[in-house]
Image (tube, helix red, strand yellow):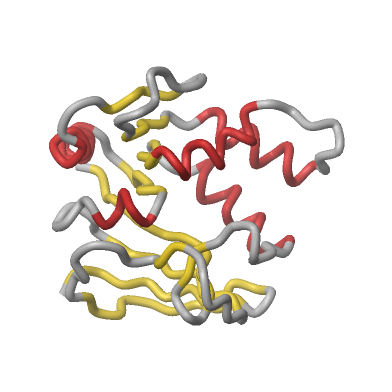
Length: 174
C-alpha cells in the first residue's frame, strides 16, 4: 500500500503561490530527489498545468533544472480534471470519482505517492497519510491556501530546517 503525501512550499501565513516564493539551490535539490523517489504523483488540473513546464527542454536551464525535468518526466502521473480531455506523456487522466480513483491507486501502488495541489488534497479526506509544509520566511497575504476544505486533525511528527531559511513541518493525521 502506498503512502499518500501532500507537501508544498508555502508562506508563513499559509498561502501557496509558486510565482511569489523562490526555491534556493539546496531546496531545489531536495525537490529533485523527492520527485525522483516517488512511485508517482496525483495532480489537480491547475497544478498539473503549472508543472507541464517541465515537459519541454529549455536551453536556458542549468544542470539542476535539467535533472528535475528528467525526474518529473520519468514518474507516473495521474491528473484529476473535469475539463481536460487529454494529458501529456507518462500521465493518465482520472475520470469519474477522484476519491475512489486515488484510493485504488493507494491500495495498488507501493512507495510514496505525492498529492499535488491544495484543492485536490482538500478533496481527499481520510486518504492523505502525511502533510509536509515547507514554510518559507515570507508573508504573502494572498494566494491559494495550503488547506482547503475540511481541516484534518493533525499531530506534528517531525521538523527539519531545509536550507535557505525554509522549515519543513511534517504532520500526520491525529
